[in-house]
Length: 123
Length: 222
Image (tube, rainbow over the protein chains, first blue to last red):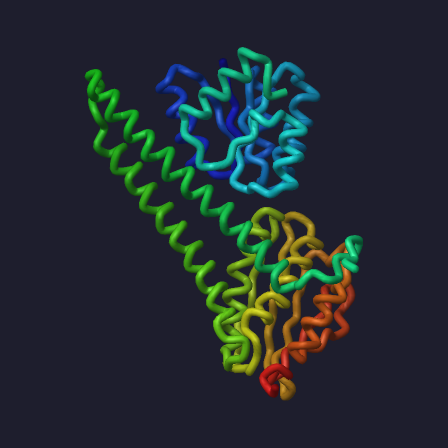
């Protein structure tokens, strides 16, 4: 699987990417929506992990944009926000199993990724 | 009966408190996530070294420094939370206006960042003290600043300018480019301003209304 990580915190996504690589999972990361858009034009990703609250557009809007062009891509929201509104909007978009609140253990994230890709969850 | 449509019953101080606490907890979660992942990466390197892959001391030092940096960032957030919380200790006290404005601008930093707007303030040329409810002033000014940030286009700037007058301290909020889609103050916010003896003044077109904070709020005279 190839993963795209999108979060405005560079030290989070770069470290997460490195940890995934040590586990044999290739990934790329982006800290802006524009960078994420460029990445998906260059490569095919099986799954994207998106922060919800970022400068510019929010993760839910980005998800809709990406799945419009890449309908087979799966999505997981990894957020620090945690409002009721965000929760309901995010699970409506991607499903309850695909909404994670920071900080999340890498084993949990990996399990969610594998479930999403094997079971077809996390639309 | 509660007015669900306009939420006029909602306490603006509590609403402001909720918004800034949510923003600060989000920031804390980001720092905690970064700390967790960097500590996890150190664990990964330790595991790799048991399998014969040499450790890179410089890399470990870099990760340790990152963890320290984000602990410091999280401490900064908790300090801002504490400063805000302690503004509620005394509903009537003599406070330096500059301190209140510094706290308020710091609290709105994340909102400005997410909007892509630069938030700054000009310091008072002459220090000014007022007798007031510090938390209520932070809530009122913060709510006005929040509205200014929301109404300023990405890439723009919001400037909080304070100046002393004979009647108190005048606060102007300048938006560049011009403020768009301005929401008006809710009845609860207007009531809060009245309670503080603050006057909402006509503004220049394209900027939010100015505020005049009195030297002594009515609550101080109770």
